[in-house]
Image 1 (tube, rainbow, N blue to C red):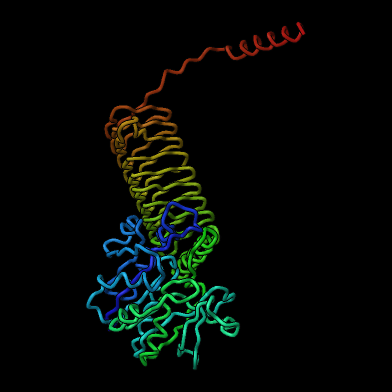
Image 2 (image 1 turned 180 degrees about the vertical axis):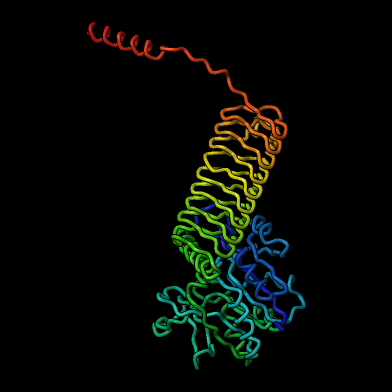
Length: 451
């Protein structure tokens, strides 16, 4: 059984390189704020308590991470100072405290759990998540003995040339003995090149107290932080590729994985086929055996087993597509239920509506749901047939088995099994077209003669 653990998420950074009014940790990856990914990873790793450190302008961050508590770092004096702000929120906690970075959304729950377990199994004061960097650059270097015994973390600005040659780098993610944490944080000094209180100094303090420290390796990609828009794009690509690989491993066919885009909570069943250039926004669930024909956009909707969608279809929030239903090319569905076996195959808008089982909606049909002030519902009964280019002016009900004639504008209810049609009487004038052409040709010849 996993032991008790708590987490401190550092999310007070200004993120000035993002050049944004949105706090850095709220920029989305897979449609979800980065800090929410981090909090979720901690929870999935078995962390019992979590507190987020925000800046003075952190109200928006606090709303996103709720119900987890937040504490404010009024003066940004470094990572050690930031972690210290969580003391009151974690008062009395003596288990493992893991410190996470709010701008590193790719960290996996299993990695967090491995770090906590490594500290506890070794009885170490501190366990640090480290990675072997392709380009160590400005990362702090991990000084190791015997492969995993950590003797020190040296910030790049403080490092000697020999230390800078070390390729093992600090991720900023640490697991610390909670019984000793606050005492070590109180002892951190800011006597360094940046004049900041470095959280990494807890390693030296732990060793000075006779406590062992260990390094736990992880892939570099997993602990990448986001400080600029270009890094955000790289992070999104990595996260999308993870989702694509997991979907295919779970039995989904992606015709062109590179052009299929997921959200963090996309759920696809087995034997789903997804055509190219398909985007899944947040809140989408697709059941087994669904065919998505490509160039489609989904958001906050459900698609039942065996349905067919697309190409070029858009399912907006509240769309519920029933088992075996067909949503065809250039069809938009919003806040509407399309029951089992119903067909909306071409060039239609179905909004604020109910379409009964096995109903057929002709090409160009529109539910006129908005009058500039309110939204109104259209109900189409089971087995109804709506002819092409019809406008259904809500609120209106088309009864079970009813037929709406093509080109109709329906403003009143049509009872079950009835025909509803609003079409002007067709008038035929024999020979009119030939006479019309003769007149036009003569006028054109007369105009040419004057020139």
